[in-house]
Image (cartoon, rainbow, N blue to C red; front, side, top):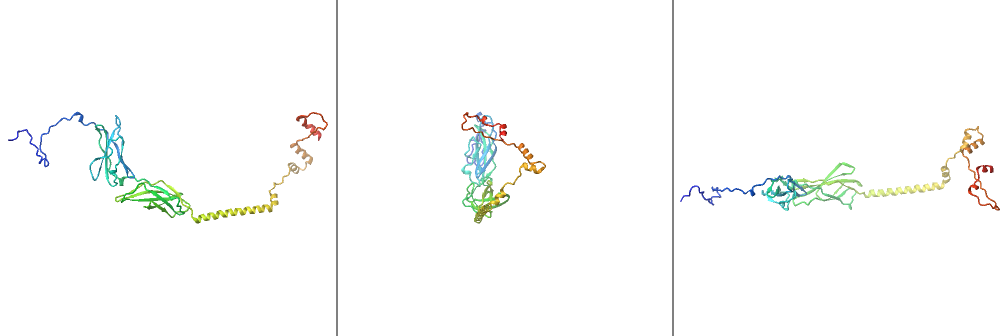
Length: 344
């Protein structure tokens, strides 16, 4: 019996894999609750930050009315080109740290992030492809000096790397050093040992240095940030120390010799020293006036000198033993100037 017109032919399961078969499709109207919502603004400034192989994806927060948004992050690798969820699904922060799965330093990783609020979402924003061994920032190492092993012409340094290398990786240290007074004349050396010595230095001299790490892998080399300049001083040699001791001894001996000779001369020539140490003889002023003008007689010179510098006179009055007068006051005992001159 032939099929009636308008009735679609049934699909053949075996032939559906080879070519599609026509079938009648009924179109249903989508409920309003399932209609796509308005798009949210997409996150901006999406970038991978990596320091010493500790990596994370960061972005700027999306500012919209109605409160904060949530964010979801996906990743994929060059070997497995399929988006997968990270440990950052519907988070409120703007940073997502890499999980342990993505700590392979040679993998090429791409990430994407979008904003979400309920059914409303934003467009996905992808980061640039990231390879840790090429794009990470290597920090400066920690440098210290072995103070207990001071050398006159060298410095013994110890370096702590910012991270531990993995098998197949090599850490090298580029050391730049100079005298503290002559920064322009720098010298460099390269070593792979974390404990090394800088030789051919001046004794008792202050040297400053800075160290940077270089990571060598199978595919690339990465140069790290330099450490802050640190200064260390070399020690004195035994010969120099002995010379300083002899010089100090001779200086003390010379001082003692001079002291002994000085005491001997003072004791032997004390009369001459006393004579020369006296103040020079000075003629009194009234004799100088007389010598300058011999026409003046000597008594006039004395009178002028007395008038210029009058003397004070003092007289003591004692009462007799038989006197019965009471004690007089200090004013009665003090003689008047006139009586004093009369007594003269």
